[in-house]
Length: 155
Image (tube, rainbow, N blue to C red; front, top):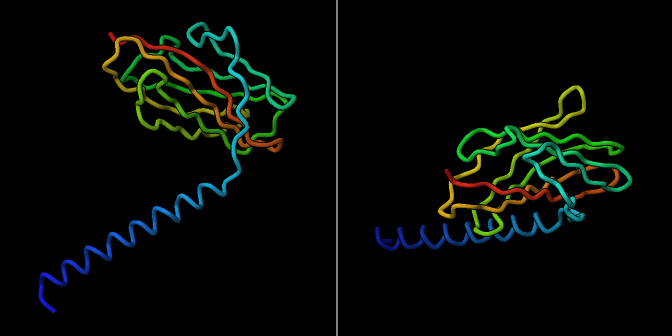
């Protein structure tokens, strides 16, 4: 077998393995139970303080610090649950008026039952950006996604 044939065979093998891996990962993801999305809290302003939304007979309280929500600076995310037995919490921040890629933060539980984590929002070419912080709850009562809306302004 020539060197060129070996390289071609290796390239074809790599493409086949990569394709198979992609399809197996998609299949694995589709088997995960979906999140039940609840309505966004009305009148919520994360810049004024934590926001609360009812979920499955309980409630979730979400906050971002600092409340000014600066870009390209560390942000502290916090979730507290009332009447929910949480097993895991994640926050996915999505750009609404421009795709800003995946920004997922897995929160860690403290001894007081509060869940917290840190993230950074990127700069955007748009002067004002609308965001959704989707709090994903994996609870004894089920899996819920609770959206909290906010905006940022580029300096």
